[in-house]
Amino acid sequence: MERFLDLPLPSPGPGEVLIEVHAAGVNPVDWKVREGMHRSFLPLDLPAVFGREAAGVVVELGPGVAGFAVGEAVFGSSARGCGGYAAHAVLTADFTIPKPEGLSFTDAAALPVAAGTAYDSVRGLGMTAGETLLILGIGGGVGVAAAQLAVSKGVSVVGTASGAKREFVASLGATPVPYDGDYSADRLAAALPNGADAVLDLVGGDALDTVSGLMSPDCRVLTVAGPDTAARFGARSLSRGNRAETLVELARRVRDGRLHPHVREIFPFAEAPSALRAVETGHPWGKVVLQVRAGTVPGV
Image (cartoon, rainbow, N blue to C red; front, top):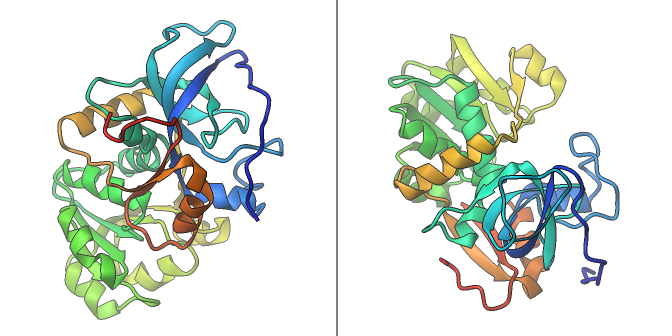
């Protein structure tokens, strides 16, 4: 049974910014925190507020923080477990930037975690025009953003997703390969006649074993699989750099049309448990966002 609690207003510490939250992104990491699955990759002092990304208006600056003004619209990544599923949240100043004019709070709140991870992944894989990228699990938040970022660089993208997401994946400029419980070697081979120059594995488990025959000899791999699997393929673990310049680049690409946040569902704050369950099922494509501040109009 989920329920809301009244908590004291958090105070920003050094390197932190306190905001009044207008919108907060909903991500798989949130339900993993609820289940206690976060301990190996996200240390938190519990109890913690859900929500690793948020957009809102600055209320207070922590000691030594410069470059922001009270009343300024911003978006970024939450700090110290003071997440975005709340009226107020503490953000990490180094991974927070002013919200550009024309970028909505709901779209801004969808960028730091999934799109930020996607940006760092595509850059980390060193993708260049003419190469081919295979994305396993392209239909989620990271995959959707990574596909668009790669396509905008002239990269050929092939992505696996459920058959129901075929049209959506194609709309990203990628070649969809249906995945409904197992991989079809024939379908993948047909989509990758020359193999893959890089693989972004957002599925984990034994997915890399299944597609290993399609990797070129110098294939670069990023994966969410465990360290043993990663080591067998010379892969690096998926990570996010938490750099302000990443958010600047993402916002620029949204504004010039190279990146669409694909916010599929916006839930009112009172329905946060439903929003979390929608992400937990793994079925939605794109992003789910909470509209936290009463009266905030999506798109503003």
